[in-house]
Length: 383
Image (cartoon, rainbow, N blue to C red; front, side, top):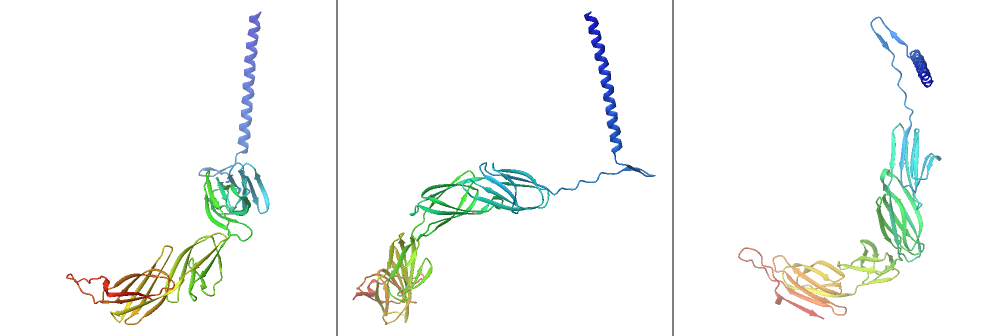
């Protein structure tokens, strides 16, 4: 009985296989007929037969935009004033049509980087921005100050501007990589702090910033002298008023009526007052022997100050010069005469008179002129 049932099962399976095979052949024949019916018509000619090619597909004009920034940033794509797409995970991938667009990337610090671009074809546009950390250590006198950051150079030409109040101490900003102009300012009589820093991707940039009160600089010396501060002309002594300058070291230059070019470096404290005091005294020079006119060179040798003057010294005439007090080196040189070199100390209330005799020069055996100072050829008087 079991053998009979097994035989019927085999016979039934074989019949089902034949039926399924026939159905499959019918389906294939139906697809083939449909395909042949939808084929493009064939043109025939007396010489050969050609088949028409399908028309090329026209471009849709869409481009593919890829924006990748930090995962904690918000990316917004705008077309004009309308928002096309917004993402909160720092990534944006979509097809866009032709037109003018702008991409805004908002960082957790509040800084917004903006890029405007135009789409004219179906190219792929990619913007990949890495971020870095800027630490501003604010050490200003006011407890709070305004910090302004301006992105002036970056990858893909993104730009942005940011202003935020910061407290004394360390302030951390997450920013896109690029070069920034930094300005820290405070209300009142304070000098803004300005600098330029580079924020590098995946690195920390530390910046020390402080806003300070200006210092006051005034002058006490001979009237009628021209005054320059850091190579900037500010007027003449006698009519100058105290001026406000940035704290720190400054170079003061004073050109006196005698022509003496005086220089001094001064340190100005924040909120302090610094007076540049240059005492003057007279020095008399006389050449009793030498050429009709010689050259007189004066050099002031000071620790924080200095100066120089070159004038003509006539024969047998007294030249009176009003000079800043200090230690001087002088050289009297005449053509065809041995130069004379000496030193003197000019103090307030102690004018100096210097008389020198220049001796004709002699030539050595090799024909070179002998240049030396005859120590006994001059007299120095303090009157």
